[in-house]
Image 1 (cartoon, rainbow, N blue to C red):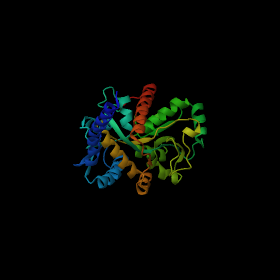
Image 2: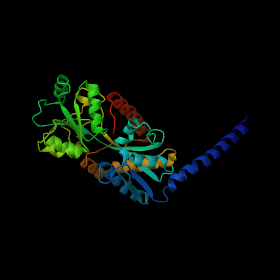
Image 3: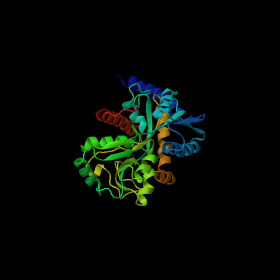
Amino acid sequence: MNDALRQSTCVLAFILSGFLVCPVLSLAQDYPVRPIRFIVAAAPGGGSDIVARLVGQRLAEILGKTIVIDNRGGASGNIGHAIAAKAAPDGYTLLLGSSNFVVNPGFFKNNPYDAIKDFSPITYAAGSPNVLVVQPDFPARSFREFVTLIRANPGKYNFGSAGMGTTSHLAAALLMLEGGIDMVHVPYNSAGPAVLALAGNQVPIGITGLPPVLPYVRKGSLRALAVTSPQRFSATPELPTIAESGFPGFEADTPQMILVPAGTPTAIITRLNTEIVRILNLPDIKERLIGIGFETVASTPDETARRIKSDVAKWARVIKLSGIQVE
């Protein structure tokens, strides 16, 4: 190829690349031009709803458009998940996915969405640990002593959870698999009744979300032994993680992930990630999240995708090996 032809080829390539890049840049700059729907696959008032509203309010201010929180609870979150999966991939539908988003594919044979193929992650916004708690007079004083005691008494002790298939139940199932221990599950219909059962001496052990149990721990009505998050929770730095207490890699927190339908333009995903991560790292937002039991994560889309893929596989394995079935 002579120099003149090479130069002409390079100029043409540059021009064509401009045509390809400019529409993408323009798309990100123009977005959004109308209100955005933020689906929360849960009822109003819970942790996911609060996280969505905290992020949504600030995001609306930044983007200059209304963000409508659309609570679609029911069917273990699958009503909301399915609606979001079928929405147009144009950046005008967001989904707040929690633990059931990654758990349900392992529970339901005909799950109405594919957690990996039907969505593009924006960010893993925040996570909340589950906590292993016991009554004050329980004979084990530490997590290691707890494991030793339960191993020596298979099937003797009951534990309460927030319900069949919840992260607190699955955290216990994972612990029993990895620790070679056997406990009897007593499911309640949410974390609140499970904590009340613990405080009322109906069950000696509980694994539940941190926020509802923390007041009881603070006043000494219950004793916390360990949290299920990968790192210690900033509001309870004195509590060790199960991972650091003999089970490396153990993780069973409650995620809050923001996603869009698969096929949403990369430029929009990038902009949403940039703005939402900035919001999540604001000091007042971090403080509000800690106040409701969540630690800011604010991951990249790729990091979130890897986490979703890992969690779907992990919980499907736990469900299968434990023989857990949701009625």
